[in-house]
Amino acid sequence: MNFTPSDLEHIQSLGLSLETIKKQIKTYKGSPNYINLSASAKIGNGILKLSESDWNDFINYYDDEKNALKVVKFTPASGAASRMFKLLQEFLSKYDPQKETINSYINKNKSVELFLFFVTIEKLPFHDEVVDKMQLMMPDYDLLNLDQKRLLFVKSILDEDYLNYSNIPKGLLPFHQYQNHTSTAFEEHLFEASKYASVNGKAQLHFTVSKAHLEQFKTKWAAIQSIVESKTNTKFKISFSCQEPNTNVLAVDLKNQPFRLNDKLFFRPSGHGALIKNLNQIDANIIFIKNIDNVVVDRFLERISSYKKGLAGVLLKLQCQVFKYAKVLESTEISDVQIVEIVDFLTQKLNICVSSEFNKYAYKYQIDYLKSKINRPIRVCGMVENEGEPGGGPFWVKAENSEISLQIVEASQVNLKLSRQKTILMNATHFNPVDIVCGIKNYKGETYDLKQFIDPKTYFITKKSKYGKQLKTLEQPGLWNGSMAHWNTVFVEVPIITFNPVKTVNDLLKFTHQAK
Image 1 (tube, rainbow, N blue to C red):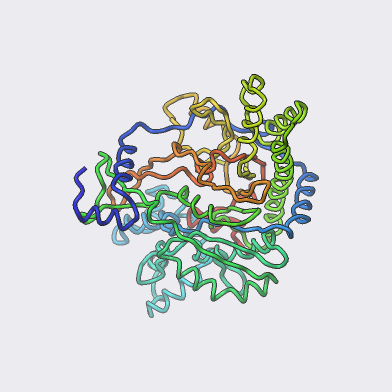
Image 2: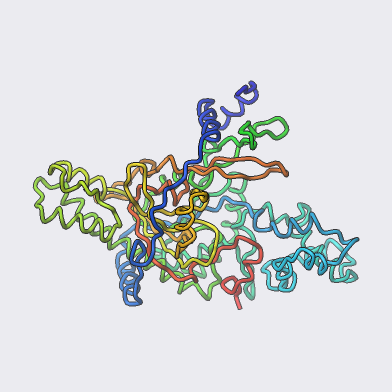
């Protein structure tokens, strides 16, 4: 590759090296590094199903233990809302009011989603704000016909001179309309945290945000802090971090040549997997991870929070046993009975497939092997029944060394040209809603270096577009995919009510996002 002096300066300004860029381009040119699915995780085979009594026990256990712990809620919130409004952007680019009505456009394109948007428009949390904006900008607004008002409504949402919603962080968009105020997803995460991540009246939250949006989040927090703290009777400690520039990757065109905009190299963030560095800076006994758009209106908070507590209770009980056995493994003499007991715990409770050669190992190597398996960060992940949502799911995965482990796998990591792999993927019964509780300390209270538990081979290569031009981009092993590949993993079934993402604007019309 022939890079200009300007290219090299650009690369260095991001904290990247030319060697790193060459490796990225080599990766693009190489064969895809697919995951090898062994089986989908199911109830009784990798996914734990709890009875109501079990849930109550784990909830109570967490409530009893949490006041002695440091708890943090970690929320990736760096995304802008552009994809959320893709439906409306396409409508604006294709619709010609001189040639057809909106209804005829909808019928011609068979757009059920656009029809739903317009007929339920008054239920959108920002409806009144948009109408006020339109009336302010257009004195003759009341003289417009229905199609003109609808078209203006969409333009007002997207236009940079109006509300510019598609360029605002998703976490700061109006999400929920209550009787006296409109709430953002950022705000809802605070109310939620007060229910299950509050310790002795204090709650600590960490948001990863885009550097360009950092001040907007800080301004929003300053504006709502006193109100939220008063309503929740909770003192909040809010911190922010940004994805480091040296985790960005060079995009390439479809021929694997560096992608350029205005003759300048184009770099993209390398996906949420880069956030393992941010997570690695958190000091806590318990970390709840949940995406910024997965929130509910306040009438569902108690129910949602109970399941978060239950997952944390599962983690704490497991961790108690893990710490006990980790101490045993440090003893000078360990009996055969204790070794068998620890192996049973690893296989039955932590889903670890112990090597078939284990019984042939010498005593010293058995102890070393068990230490290597038990001294790892733990994650307990909620799993919902599959309803066709895009994203990752729970699978048993076979590594290159033939070890089998539980992993969260995205469809893009699977070679769909192989019929067996496609069949396993399509027959998955559950889906990952990014509902994760993490334990990142060992039995001595020391925090693990999370970078040591990444599988670097589980990267993604995905196709994107920029200003209508096709490109390829490299994404680091996902935060809850390859970046946690070597964690000890437990999957627990949770109800679908816990999964309420807002991927499109119409998702705001679902009942969990409606205050009444």
